[in-house]
Length: 627
Image (cartoon, rainbow, N blue to C red; front, top):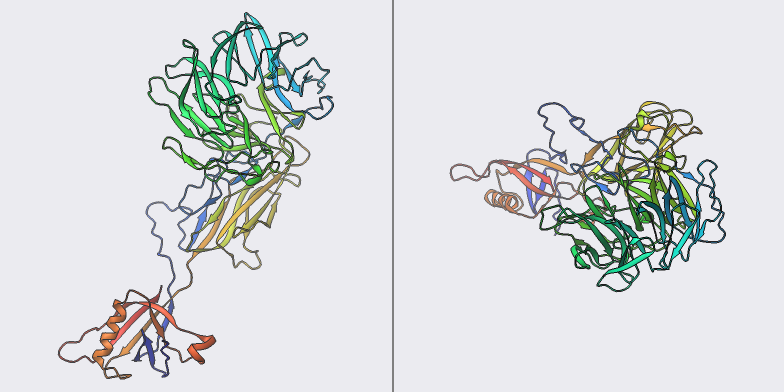
């Protein structure tokens, strides 16, 4: 029931009226505790303001971040994130059209005698690096290529394409031979050529074209997704088969396939394009990648989840299926087909190390991409420009005496230079950079569930800027899908943006905020704008709450309550665990109406709760605060 205050010097606490000696004083009480700084001052030592200064060397895949959490990740970026001064990605070159008519898939890319060959559907053609052309068809495969391999057998170097209807090989690029032995994937081990067919039957050949049956996978037809060599627990190089059900190892002495410790829930893309890189085996599974380390002398293998599906994964239109993993000196590359849904996977732990999350997306909605992992995080090396163009195969080569990554998409071959050693792009004047629309999007920065923020300033330092080399910066707040333009930078040095503008620098209130950076270059391919990770200055605010102080007159009875009863009622209000009602305004209207100025408070302190002797008269100063 509402207790109405009717007198000027009166207050009601927990439904009991008290006469006051002084007016009720109100003060603002929702303040954070002051910061205490020991030792050197840091960027966050300001008494009122706070700073978020993210770095991005941990790669992409972090959608949200809060104060106190490690802030070394971006949500999404097509910019390389490995260096302090961030610039545009490497320029990809689209080679000439193959000249092959009709609609087809580039099944595989191979190499022989320092030249690149590609299977455009069933037509094999060779690239002319000087004229940027693919020449005429050198061989017609019996089916679409499913694999390629360059190997030496009996001191002859061959290039072979597997096609399920057999494999087609050449030693000179001019004469090609079709072998009708059913072959899905090819590998080379123990001075022999090995192949496996769709049923999981392994074969080998010590003489080209003369195959011998070996081990049979104990799985249904269509289960195998890759055949490759890697080390086993004894440190010996053996053959592995990546399948829809997990990883199998070949026992040459018994001609059997044995299941390894990496037994996985069924997934149609488990192991597709698996590879050994550095000291471990890497097994794709949709968006996921498992790292499998079978160290010599260990009874059990070590398994980690390391794929781009970790944490918050990829944006919904950038997901898909990893078709192939390719090792380079600096990165493990994931060839991700964004036009194919990765399928449904439940969240599950792998040997107690970490979890990853399966996702379901509609087919034909994503952008295909090439991602790179340096054992710290993933970054985007290249992003396709259409949601309808699938990426199918990639190949790393030093053909034409130039170290490149070649890949096929939508019936065309691209290539991009890659580094054979660790090269700081700031020290190179010959690297070329993308002219596409590139971007870096930070995670949503959230001050906290019970805290609001006020954006004050954004600072960023830029380099190599000009009228042509510029960068636009935008922001979005409160999970909005749209961005607000902040500034376009075309000069070197530190740029500071004041929210919402320098004319009215009152700040912008936010629950979450993120920033988008879009650098562009001019017509000179060797120039790129660069920038350091930004600094964001903001204030943390609690919801406004008020405190109250009043001196109560307990010298005589008031409102039909004696001094002792008033004291007892005050003690009851103090000891009440729930909030108590405080009112001290004579507002109009039933139940206070539109101008209801009741407050719900905790009693923090009260003086003179008891007097000496047998008298209960006196005064008490009471302090209260909203919760």
